Image (cartoon, rainbow, N blue to C red):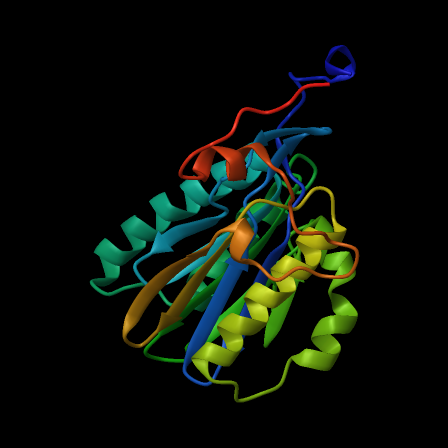
Length: 236
């Protein structure tokens, strides 16, 4: 099996990323699995990257492409902030991402979600899918796991949610995608952005809800090692 894997293939964040607005700010969420074909290259990667103090981006697609776009945008925003003497708005950040994505659309394989809060427009979410289109949306989802979530969001999303409702929705949605999508997995990370600042939260895989056909782990090696007086395993 291992000999059939192309371990030198480009790293792909076949993934689940989500951005949701609520009454007062935004919540961004993502899983943590980075894959190389069928091989999990990193099971605890961080796909929510800071652009400025008040704006973050969720990355999907090619890990290399999304990282270099984020790095360039962060560099340009740093210059922009120095020139203006104040933080860039969410719309400016999203437009810079759009310029790079659209201008290099024949070479880039990445879909991004930009979310943040500024004093002019409050909490905003922008989706920049493959090709570099810029879409301002109340919520958006991306990555391979998003295919399983469109109907769920049509039913579950509502305007005027509280911060806790929005974050619970994001965690529930990512855990649903992890259950169905083989390219999504690991832990769930969220970033809450509002007028009070930024809050990062982390939900380990064993604390996520289980869904249809998912089974509790039984007789796992970790359970045996964590017991006070471990008994030797019987190999028959």
